Image (tube, rainbow, N blue to C red):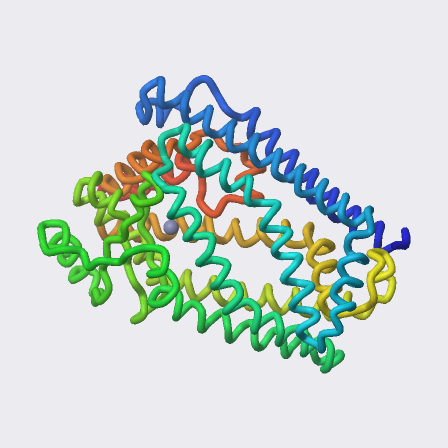
Length: 418
Ligand SMILES: [Zn+2]
């Protein structure tokens, strides 16, 4: 390896992204408070409020440790000549393209998984368990991991092979070919996810007849929604956290209520939560999200194409030039760009949350929506005082206090002034 300007650029990118993460985490840690904000003073009893703050600190600390270990591992592997060694190891097998690249990328993925495994185990069986959320058995944990690996191999490997072929054989046309395939694949995946992938992890059962189903159907008629797929999923097998989601869009959409939600929440609140989820689809959030993801992919593939042609990049890591090695180095170099793009998409996603809340308030009532948010927040020990910098960087949802304040305003504006 040589210390050329590409090496310095990658080092700067990795360190800068790490420092931004670290600053956000430290600010977040320091923004835990002894007392809740006034509007949410009654959300928790004192003990649970302190638990929510302890949870925020513990998970922030876990994030700092994880980020530090990951940075140290990447830099250690790089400076010890690991990339060059792995490149030669793979080349020694004499496999034809794209098999050599798949082997290289496969080994990188295995290394990364091995590095993150202790953190997931700690997170599931210690952190979540300590706060009473975890219900995942070791068996479920292992099976989930294996299913994810098989899916990655079945879906990820053919796609990676195509990308490698395009960039190796098509030269300056490689980027848009890869972009086209990635865009088509992501649209197809969105259709397949609800029917074929999610059922591998969650058991979907139709919501049984009863007063909840009737209340939901009444609401659906009122907003002119045809309800095809209304399911209860067994989220309780993994976690006590309650949730609901809509997967897919339009006619292939499935609305899924976690059993933890159905068991615990009053009917009007459940309808409000469902209205929020349906709101995302109705307001076109899902389609807009897909379009943005495709634009994002295009920008990244274009930059990848530019970077792959730079001989200095491979010298910086001590490997021979190849699409597979370049792909890994580009991923490291692009960390700060991903952070910025992530923050931009987070900002949009938070706007969508306000819009979906408003849709729910208008169609199912602001009061039940507020109560539902409060009870979900309480059950999930949500942190009431997240630091704004961290929210801006990572959060897909606005802080609870802001969502409730927006709903409060919508109630006030409904009072007729005469
Ligand atoms: Zn939402």
